[in-house]
Image 1 (tube, one colour):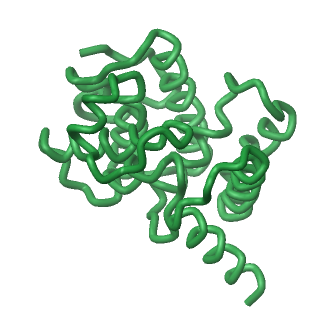
Image 2: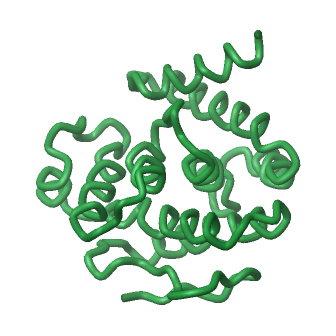
Length: 196
């Protein structure tokens, strides 16, 4: 099992890390560590209780656990997920494997399963992961805008979530990818909240 690097906030209890079954490249591990560091900064600024912080960390370390797995492994754990489509199968596969290995927290599993597409019914672990995964500083596109959003998250997580969904939707539309139904429901839930 890979042990994470120190973050500014260390939760009590066992240290979250990649599960032994994870298939990640060194670059993917660095991405996961950047997501954890960003979420740590947010948790500290927001005064997130330790129990919630543990949930966030489990979701972070699981979200890309099978991102670099062969297609056969993804098919085994997520046979009904859409193959290809921008690498959307790894979230459902990682969630299914985590559940098989004993993860029982529905919010953590939903965060992992839908981290690439979004889910209107998410709790804070899912919303945090969706934003941190996109806003972590290692991504090359829209760096200044993403850094501003990352800085705002602790004070205005709802508005930052809406902006992240908007940016991700715009990118999906520009690429010509079909919009998964959970993505559309997430956007509509945020748009209704803003207009009501």
